[in-house]
Amino acid sequence: MGAGLAGMLALTLYSAIGQSFAVVNVTRENLRATQMLEEKMEVIRLIKWEDLTTSGFVPSSTTEFYDPSGGAGKKGAAYTLTASIAAAPISDSYASNLKLVTVTARWTSNGVQRQRTMQTFASRWGLQNYVYPVVKP
Figure (cartoon, rainbow, N blue to C red):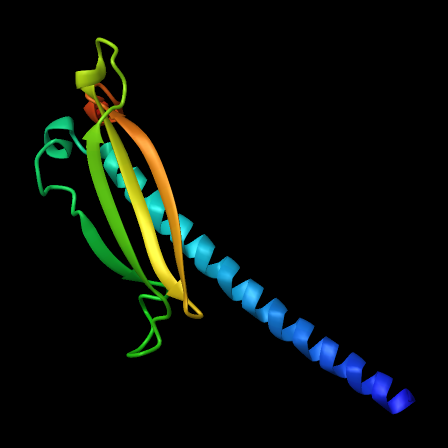
């Protein structure tokens, strides 16, 4: 009886350890996807309005890897990043000066398709138009 109970406990412990490694892996992949999305959003935040509204200036789809510096076959999950720029879904007078930017990351982890999305508004009069003067000594 005791050996059966010890065997069941060992099996449960082994299963729990395996599940914890899977959870850590998925969490790492989610964090990497969030980092990539934030990077794309920061780039878009600094693009001039004319470039943002030029078709093809912002790539609609790119592929990045979990570990870009990894060797052949060791780069980890492949993330497909898609960006779309659309008219802002508002009807106010300044609607023509706003764009809705959506960036989505998709990847497959352990046979499961995963996805993360970020959205922001970009304004014609946003941060990209500020030019800070260079002060010469």
